[in-house]
Every structure is written in structure tokens, then in C-alpha cells.
Length: 121
Image 1 (cartoon, rainbow, N blue to C red):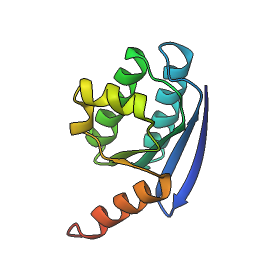
Image 2: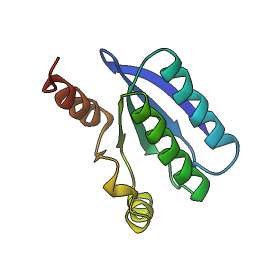
Image 3: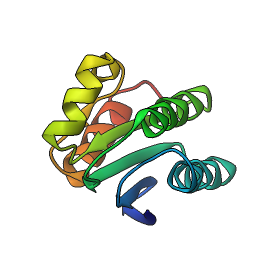
């Protein structure tokens, strides 16, 4: 699995995942990418799963772990491009209740930008 990092809007980063998110190397790559962002004080993150055909229990756990780390850092993480199979897994495990999902990375980034701009300064 590959992780490509892009700044889609000012201060909002997309981690575009390519390949199955399975326990092992793929999960480690995702974790390192999120840790790098947090180390740079970048706390507005979109995980783009458009090119992720499947997620196993390890991948699911890693997504939840990354969501938790971003929130602890005071940030926001949304998901984008989640396919029907993975949405089914999220619903079955109730992960869909704790993270917002959008059809595209741009919509997810706009969701983050909108929620942050309405917050008091």
C-alpha cells in the first residue's frame, strides 16, 4: 500500500491511500504518515480511501487509532471515497458513527474547513 500526501486546501492535508489497508506494513505506513502530520502541527486530515479495495480488522483499528490521535491533538479527520464493502465494515463495527465520510477528498476538506471557520476564534 502507498500513502500520498497532498495539501488540498490551506492547512488541510489529504492522505491518499492506494491498495488494501491490511494489518502489517500498510497500517504502519498510515500511522507514520499521520504521525508526521501531527509532528508538524497539521491536525486537519482527510483519509482518501478511493483506491482502497478492502480493509481488514488491523486496518480498521489503525483508522480508529489515527482518528483518536488527531482528535487528541485538537484536530479533525474525515474519510473520503469509501467503497460499499468498507462502508459495510464501518457500519457493522459502528465506526461510521464516530467519523464523517464524504464522496470525495475535496468535499471532506470543505467539510473540515466549514466546521473550523464557524468555530469561535
